[in-house]
Length: 431
Image (tube, rainbow, N blue to C red):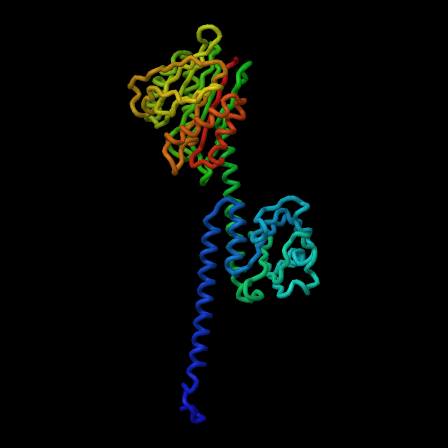
């Protein structure tokens, strides 16, 4: 009984309604928190800066059910230098000045006063001006700043929430997302700097190509698209005292600083031995294998050493030996490019006393010889054999092109993304 003499459950439908409303509110809050956690994990898993920015916008839209989203990146002067948009006619990134906001209106207010901004009716707000002519009409807006350390990196804008204006709870969860976004952006920027430093260090270990009158020479190094790590891929082209070009491609097993150090040592030793031997590639590799065994206990590496010797008449002959490496690729205009399969041999570091075999082939006019490491053909979605077939098909298409264009086509084939480092060396003798 209540003090008024009534029963507590005289209106059970009202009580049940209140309980159900409370449960729905708890479910909504749980769903929003779960969404926030998923969003933070998603943006934290990405290391490239551009995808991070796109993920932040998509995560913000999803969290508060916004129809439109954008992320404006600011420079130190508070000017927009990039705008990532989502939900419009086409999602895009804009970095051209004529397409970027000029800092007026509501967007400028958030730049000048970096605090959360909520607008329930944009049509009546005095600052809602300056949108491009093709910009869709928006009703509500939620904007929050994104800080990286103590600096304002940019602002996240969300517009037109489904079902009504943005709430204080929406603002809180988007602010939490912005905090995680700042850390993700800082990680991506650090990753970018690390990639650049790693790539620069690796390239400094590689030799410059010599000038050979009448020859086409091209060399490429493409670092892995995954997390940066120092590797052991290298190329070299040595002009021997007898005038014969000596081509080298190799890959030290391992991906760390030690692999890079061993790579540099092997490359330097091989240069000295090749200049001293001026003979068959097989002798060069056997001598190199023995020296490495004596000095370093035999580090594991795959190598191809090849000489482009004068053949009968004005032709050229390729003479090469392999220590467990992929074979040379021959690209002749008008013909199907093919790998020169022959005795592969064992990698360096297995047994320095094992014999090695020289292989040779006369080169047709206009032929190009390409040596590369396995990063060019490795892919988790197919076998190395399939990757080699694909690269041979690209080389067939571009066999008559200048070597620079041929090499660019080979590196562009898988979309420019590689799971391992790639070293590539291409040579075309004079016609």
